[in-house]
Length: 153
Length: 75
Image (cartoon, rainbow over all chains, first blue to last red; front, side, top):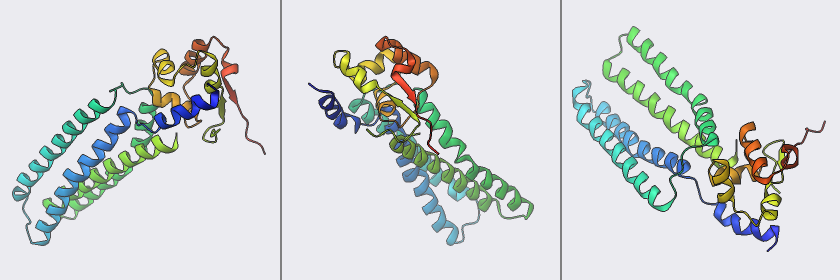
């Protein structure tokens, strides 16, 4: 066996993703399905003139249940197919760097919400501005993590 | 060898071969990181912390500079 054969035998293996990387994919999918789905429904409700928060509560509760369910099911399946290793220094660095480069989206949303409150914009719009910025921030973080895992950091 | 991601080169692949064809998983278990991290270090996609670099060198019984080399950017 040569060095080349060791390398080539592990090249296929290197295509595997770590449990942490799978976890990021699961979080991204659960967010897009749950919160993304909620925002689509909420968009339709807002365009149909729903201007009070209570009608949005059951839809939001359903979205949270969906996020938790997809996360739990996804992690159970991931742990069956791969060894659930603990996060190591590379995982923590990727998590930190992705968060530091995506958190500004949430900050912009918070500042926008404060400005909206000063301008007496309705609470339903302020709440959804905050939700959209939270969604954008989390999705951006997950996407950046996936990029860092595949391209290196 | 694709090591363009960082300015740190390494001999881990060769050293694994000369240590009884040690697998990435075996090295990862001894160092305390995931196999994917060993793979990323070998491929130049991740520069390990000083502690992990020392741990890797310790596994192979080599001084750090025989395992990792800094390549200064030209120009």
